[in-house]
Image 1 (cartoon, chains in turn cyan, orange):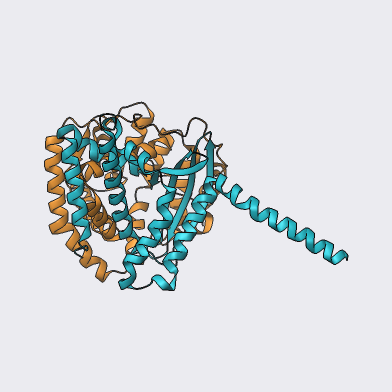
Image 2 (cartoon, chains in turn brown, green):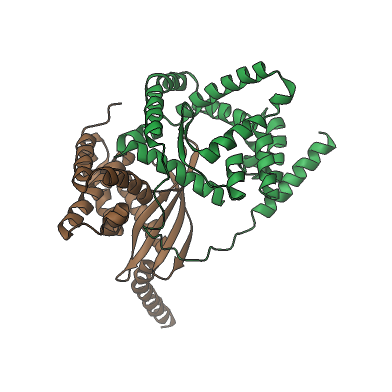
Amino acid sequence: MIRLHVFICKLITLSTLAVALPAWAADSPLTLIRSTTERARAALQDPAYQGDDRRQARVEKVKEILLPQFDSAELAKRTLGPYWRDRTDAQRKEFTQLFIQLIEKTYSGALDRYNADVQFFYDQERIDGDFAEVDTRVFDPVQNKTYSINYQLHKVDGKWLIYDIVAENVSLVRNYRNQFNRILSKSSYEDLVQTIQAKLKQLSTPASS
Amino acid sequence: MSSKLAVAIFIGVLSAGLASQPVLAQTGSLDRDETEHAPPYDPWEPVNQKIFWFNLRLDEYVLRPVATGYSKVVPEPARQSVGRFIKNLGIVERLANNLLQGKFPGAGQEIGRFAINTTLGGVGLFDVADQWFGLKASPEDFGQTLAVYGVASGPYLMLPFYGPSTVRDTVGLAVDSAMNPMNYFLSTVEVMAIRGGLTVVNAVNYRSLNLQFFEDVDRYAVDLYGAVQDGYLQRREKAIEE
């Protein structure tokens, strides 16, 4: 009888935990970064996605995991900086889509070089109201090098979303903003769109070496 | 081991302990506003552009092929040792700049690192100071010292062969190389020859260790000049902040 009682208690505790855990997990930016990274890692190591012929499926799978964690419009807005204001809604949508494609292409190249021995360290998080920062490090045993990767997040409708990544002290958003602003200040928005489209086309062909 | 060396190591280890005290979490807003950073100050862009393209050609036709060949002949651990050996020689300027910036734990770390790596680390080929004693490098240069004393970076400046810089960092570079102890022992011609040789070896070595990185930047940048410029300035900003 006591045994049954203990069993029921355990069951209740476990089921409460099971309900409470995801809710709590959604609240911590560090947990979010860790679980997203681990899910992407699991997908990359999944036997179903190995080999060159499954590259497309692998990239799609990782994209499916990563993309919902990013605030695409915020990324695009911040890379355009002061030029975002002058864009129409249609242009903003167009640009957001283009920019995300550019990021995807860049990262799918990096995925090809992923190896199972890469180690991830999730160091700390800082939360300040609706903004948060997560410090992580990646150790690449092939190069025997550790890289710092810092994620900037903000809360949108109760969910933490990434709006910038700072790799080795270089903010992705700031770096693209400098590139885009140089084109925008000398030429036009239309020219920037064309330049990015040309880049996307070039990236669709495999690297020369 | 001489007693002086032992003292130096002791001070180094001690101050490294002090340096690794947990730093209080930063206060202030984490919101990185997109209007926070002004665009880089680059009034000499036409000239910088020309030097940038010269450097790119130089890289494409000389440095990259040489570095690629070198990376095939010399295994990576050996190349990393070459890099560490050359880095170890820069002790005097790093020490001086740590002291000038009032970074006494950093200065102690550098003394300890030099003492340990020059002896136990086989003339600096291995970084045992970090691996065995947890003594991290405190790489300060005179450009950072000037920044600490309130000198503004001045215009962005692309240097031939060397790469991105600013006016302040170029002055820093000149002062740092004048601090090298070789200057006291050798004639100017010898110093120039050795420094030239070391610079070339260092450039080839560094390039060989970063073949993929250079290729990635080149491939994925929409505006390469802007990507390199911002990358340099952001990393410098962070280095000065620390």
